[in-house]
Image (cartoon, rainbow, N blue to C red):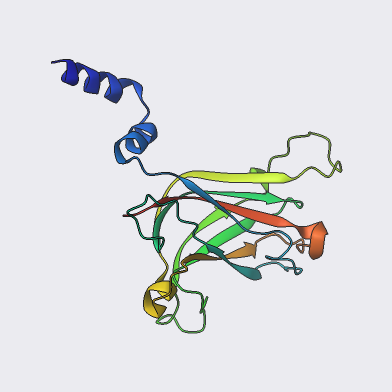
Length: 185
């Protein structure tokens, strides 16, 4: 009887995402692109840069360090420029667009310039614009790692500039993409 009451209490008072996290006991990992290496060139409207981030596995002693399957639960962007962005996910590191049969496109997340928020309301203070999408359920498998039988799995994505303003190159156009991922076992 106590167990039933405890389960009822948990089901009523713990949010669904917290309940799922409690039930599965799977850690959420955060993967970050590197603003000094990734997407440093100027990017014109409707053009993109490509990024591959290694999936850093948080493993128990009995797990394999290879984690080529994850669920993308959230995407966040930090950018020095307030632009509209798409983050397109690909299952391979080829980013093919020439042939639909060979295209490894999986899903995307779109952000408008209005989604960009600053900590400081004063423009020109060097403060970053921050964008966020939560509650995603993008099931991701690195097919490049699966087909090549490598031990390094990555999340492959492109960052597309949807604004008429060109993303600046170098430090003036720095951008970081942060992925919240849950391992699939």
